[in-house]
Length: 387
Figure 1 (tube, rainbow, N blue to C red):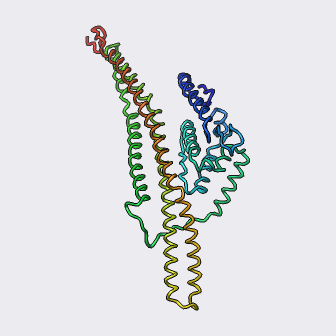
Figure 2: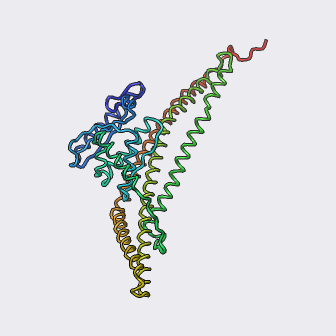
Figure 3: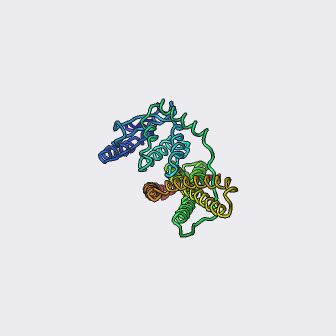
């Protein structure tokens, strides 16, 4: 195993040339991007030393004014990354906080973490968060202190009360309802695609048709045509099956990440709907109190006045929260929708390129196998010799 000199990723010797060419191009592209204003780029790697420390190396390049330097190099553990997302979810309820999927392989974890941080860096609100700046630039001691403060807030946090309105003014033509229906539709379609790819990959690995050609070859006692041709076909089948599994697993993981990203958007719409429900509840409560006050004398309305004052205060708070949720909702959904399509575009390009390369590989291998299967039969080498 060797390591790339640019990103320190471990790989086989036969992969180093192609990987270095791609990695070098990506590095040059990122450096060129720094010439653009308001740039924030994050690259995640994991060297052998990082593996021993159970951490990832996070390299940040930026020209944002609130960053003192243009280059930062920190190490963060997997728990640090999960803490960052949990904290952002609590602080930025009006935003679609991207997901961070739990991956089993080191390559998968590195890939997912870089995707997560890239989504944050491309978000016009989240990228300005002091929490993200701390995560990308802070010392280990500062991260520990921030974690302790977060834990204290969580221990004091009370579960929010969800109010169901006595009347609700939504319809099938409402923008929020349309958006929710669209997300449900794309979730169903994307989930179906992921399940199909996953089941196809699993069923394909169980077929193992190469083993049957191998079995035919091994059953031949002599170097017959059947033995030679079956051995060639067995090797072709095995090579093709091995070559596509890991690449397609990465594609499935990428699609799953986009699906979780859509779930995050659904969570935002759920928070918006809850905010609407809270506002409508207290609006109704104020209206009921005012109606009751009209029919009561001053002496008996003390408790009602207190109830009205509390409801009115909660109504103002609910209105302010709802306005905050709606203030940037249009831009938030626009950014999410564009980012979702941008990522799916990249995945589809990678998938079609992968399939094209696989079919080219299949074509060349089957052409070679055709030559082997068209070889002449020998009358001298026989499997059955009856004397």
